[in-house]
Image (cartoon, rainbow, N blue to C red; front, side, top):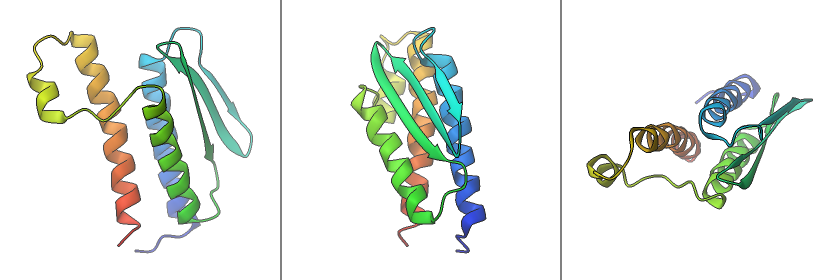
Length: 122
């Protein structure tokens, strides 16, 4: 698995884009702040709870990438966003369309993170 700096940077770019997408869609209005230095520093609030992610633009190693991704995962869970139990979610009749979309958007991120973290463990 040629995991070099380039792949690592590509992985982080994907995470950054996906995260930015869900922040734009689901973060509390007016709380989003994204700064770009040698890292993307992404802050916002979800339901009044502060969320922060720091993603290296040129990560030094696949391991660093993995650490970043699992921190993002922890951060999301920390503000009360968890991977849905997919099947039960879909069948949950009480969800509004917005809630369902939100679930799906966040599930996409969790799937992405789990995939990346797993694939480097082989």
